[in-house]
Amino acid sequence: MIPEQVVIDDKSGLMTPNTGRYRKRLSELRGLFQDAQVLEAEIRAKGDPVVYEVIEYKKGGSDLFFGTTAILPGKVNAEYYMTRGHFHKRRDMGEVYYTRNGAGILLLESPDGETNVIEMRPGTCAFIAPNWAHRSINIGAESLVFVWVCSVDAGHDYGQILRTGMRKIVVEREGKVAVLDNPSMVP
Ligand code: F6R
Ligand code: ZN
View 1: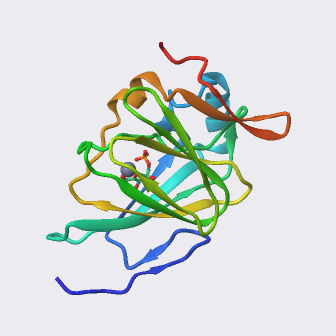
View 2: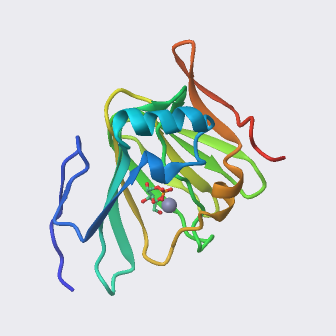
């Protein structure tokens, strides 16, 4: 393994070089948003738009890897575009999110249902403590771009959040960003 420089474009999240990337389109995020009917209408009207893209730099044998996530601006009804959200498989492993562009909310949830909200704007760095589920939400008019760094062993556990959602949702209400109780959360 040799050290290497990686160039990151803050506006788009493009990383050069990178070792992998994937996109999530609206049709792959069914069940995530409150309004399933509007989601289907948006898929038809906008040709299944990209919601977010993840680009990573991972080298075999290293303990760390890093990457970027770029969430496009958009909403499904009043609910802002967001990532799926996950715990790490290794609950003892945290992560760092360093925001480079746009405006967002990092929504965190502990296993006993405690919520924590961290503002994301260029220059802010979020410490995601171990054992907190995390989802990022783009509340602005530009792409929300952040750099993340974590252990290669951390892994993803999507199960619980895919099943039940998170306790809070982030929506536009009367022209403002509002963090509300999730009405469809099974208690
Ligand atoms: C990795 C991490 C990020 C997210 C990415 C997409 O541990 O937190 O790289 O994986 O922002 O979010 P999810 O994976 O929740 O769809
Ligand atoms: Zn993570």
